[in-house]
Image 1 (tube, rainbow, N blue to C red):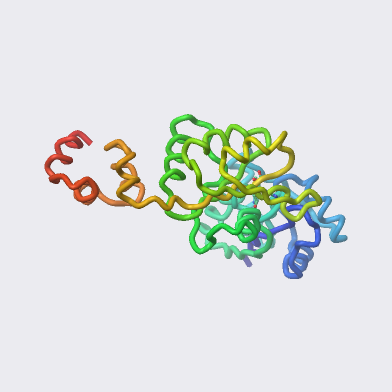
Image 2: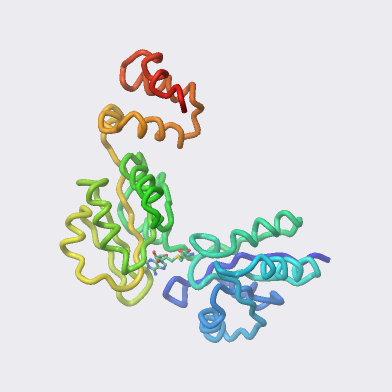
Length: 273
Ligand code: SAM
């Protein structure tokens, strides 16, 4: 009989943050697939669990993935864990989930800590709707696109950042977020846990040398739509609706409406698109 795959959330700092169900599953499965087996061993030792582990990380090969799926197909139950928090969220595991579902394997989430959720709920920033962008890309072009998305975001935006890149990211945010409130949730659930709020510029001035782990929570852009489009080039305006999934005809119609011009006028500009 085919086994099952459990996606088990583990602590993001405080070892007490693990559910009873997560502990039971880690005890019951045949194998634990870990992002870094040394890191997971610390948790397993703390929980007094001894278990066979296989490493699976972002550089793991296709063969490694298929080997794991094969074990599940031959009846082994597997728990997937990352170094911290919820697997798959800015962490390995997604390809395994996709491959498992293709093979008809049951994939079961075991929910628990996730830094973006923990940071958001303590930030005081609107949590009703939010956009999670993970880590901002390093590639110049895609990074610029993501920054544009943040600039015009009508909901809270959440990003992850490594300490050595935090300053650069805040510098980029100064330009696109202006006076919007930002909260930096630092070292959530750990000894030096701290929530620092301010504009990107204020945060840069007061931050000092960033050490530890950070979630950045950015308040929405509350400017009225008219103002947003006024500040966009036609290309950016087009991309704005393209990202929302509109087709060319509707985009042109919408741009004409926003800019109070005739549709034909906009159509001519995008004739080659
Ligand atoms: N899968 C994890 C989760 O569920 O949150 C995220 C993994 S991602 C590779 C690591 C990033 O998550 C860090 O660079 C940081 O932005 C954020 N993070 C993880 N733990 C954190 C903590 N205790 N405090 C603040 N941010 C944290």
